[in-house]
Image 1 (tube, rainbow, N blue to C red):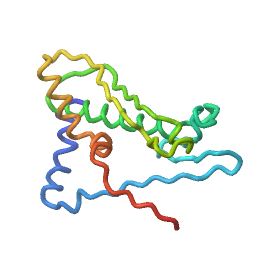
Image 2 (cartoon, rainbow, N blue to C red):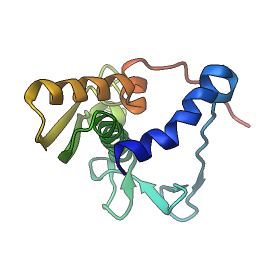
Image 3 (cartoon, rainbow, N blue to C red):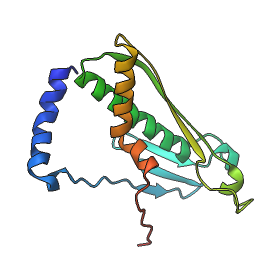
Image 4 (cartoon, rainbow, N blue to C red):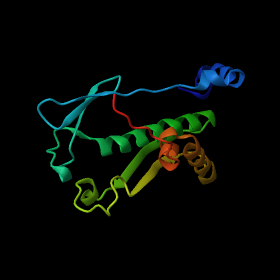
Length: 166
């Protein structure tokens, strides 16, 4: 998609959201079905069914996706799409990769040590990209990507999460 095409798609949406803030509020949904024979949860992604299970460090055998990996993959996907959108809007061509890695201590996850955090203790997002744009323009694209990447901002500014049983 080129700059004109992206703007043609987004301009009426932006106009609508400026005129009616309520129209911009969207609730996304996800659901999973618990495995009956193994420790797993099947998640419908809209495009495919992903079977998530235990990471090998907690007893998994790599036959299922790890939800921690899926979180990092969501970050990479969001950052990559946001980067491309920003670059296209600025008339800049960018190629390359987006990488994410995160540190986990399975002593916390496995309940071995209650003092060890459960969850990622650090996440690193790397843009390994090339462009014909100068370094300043590319740095600006990445800074804007950081500002508007939904998953990155959600991780940085954790919203309240309600947990309930139904």
